[in-house]
Amino acid sequence: MITSTHRTRRIPKRFTPYVFAFFMAGIMAFLMSMVIVAANSGIHSGYLFRVVHAYTLAMPVAFFCVLIVRPIVMHLVSALVHID
Image (cartoon, rainbow, N blue to C red):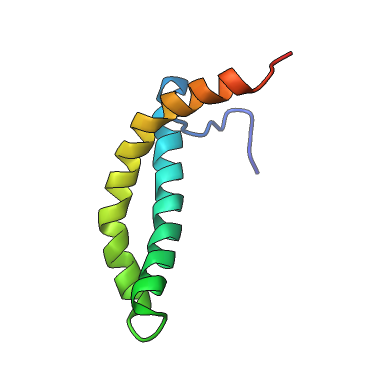
């Protein structure tokens, strides 16, 4: 049972862009690693190992790319989407 004195540890709001980038990069890098490995070498013995190997390179690259691209995307979205 959770009491009123129970508090969860959370990351401060100022780190939101970095947390977003971490999860976005992690999910997208894993999905893209799965697709690219399957397209290049097929889905057979050792597939998951090859995906994890590709992911270890893709994740850090994707993280920094999301950090760089996010402000540009936010600007493009705000230019195209009408906010009431």
